[in-house]
Length: 602
Ligand code: ARG
Image 1: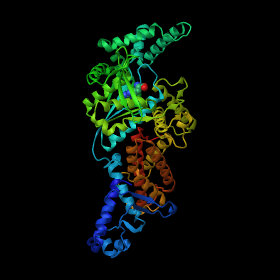
Image 2: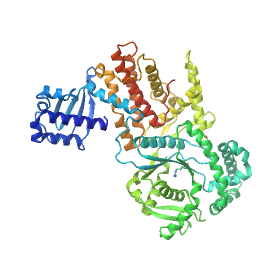
Image 3: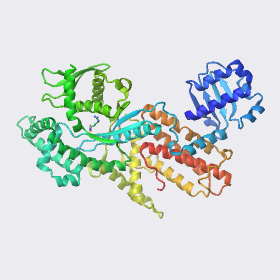
Image 4: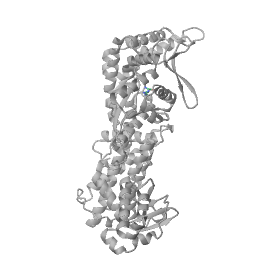
């Protein structure tokens, strides 16, 4: 039950007691109860599942230190006068056992306030009053590498990072969304060579992703060939590899080379934008590792000055000593030839971002495999006495497990749009097989949204750290727990509302006409949306919301079957219509938070 509603109930109960029995107030018991209701005590709104025919709801207040003898007499003595004053009385009766008081609430009262709240808050329903202070939070996600495949980890990071950002934004935080492209490092010395040898500007501008990938594959083949021919033990890396180290070092020292890099990044970003848009994913800014090359060289100087940089005698590498809970780690930040590493650039980047955005905290949504990397990042920031790391260090790395088996008809997935196209094509095929006479107007668009919804739900229904095997059949299932099922529930609600034969804009209704358990169960589930949002916020796990939405769609479908709106007496139809409208709002809010566009037609 929502914080707001709990508070409202608490206030009512207190008011009720106050007005009802002066003696109680004088004896101080009301104050005790006020403490109970406002202090850090957990309330639960519970239904008695065993009594589906006659659902009862109560607010359960636990950990009651002081018993209140004769609570019911207190509540209900002189009942007449009180109920007149506070009509309608929300509580049927109270029951007190073992440090717990249950206040049984009249369902129609409960339904009334929940429906009114959802109707008035609309697309902001579920997000009011959850956070105490508004923060600026920087979330970095997706972060693929230029010229290399967009792998399942980049997709999962995109989906999870987008959800976390949406969630923060919905409850009122300011969110900076960053995509940090991998475009720097020794491998890119290789790409520079490859581009001279195999690349051309024309093909690059036509399809930057595919062209750079082709170049990268070819130059890597050269490296492999040279290694094959390198003599009996085949361990020697050849000329191309050696030259790439040199090129990279020069690229880092001399900034004029960065022009080409900026171009690679800019045109890749253009293409990425389109594809991310299909996934409803946006970024405040795109960055590249190359942007931090100069800053990381400066950082090395600073580390030297602060006596934090040590040079390993045997390897010649520069490292910082950091202490983890258990181990001492040598975090290497400089190669023996003086050039920087992935870690060095990450430190330079986060320090720079803090200067620019002044964030309160930051998250990196990155595969679990990079755990050590982020431990080192955190350790170094601690060494540098960065103040914000003390408070939020534990939440820096938002880890997730690997997806295996993500492949398309063309083989192992290389580009993001191949994955999305595959989903779309498969959906179109299924729709064509299913469709009889009623054609959906724009199959293409619908199929694209369905494909994306399915991929998102498949990903977010798992706990972040779970690894899972990707299966197109499961992802695109029209039955069971899938994105398609949620879309279907939403589209059905839209058509019910459209064809109900009532005034759909009227919010004139009386909840006394909602007597069926199916209606009340559904309303109760709607009421717990805010709790689910809160749970996601503390755990940064989307699975709570996904499972909440699956249950919501089940309650909706039961209500759909049992609560007709069309051709019913006006009062009943109006009251039921509001329930369906609120269910639709809640479903749409949840789907939007997950990054899915709810469909009106399917
Ligand atoms: N580009 C990296 C990769 O593909 C992920 C970057 C994660 N973010 C970071 N700030 N290190 O593995």
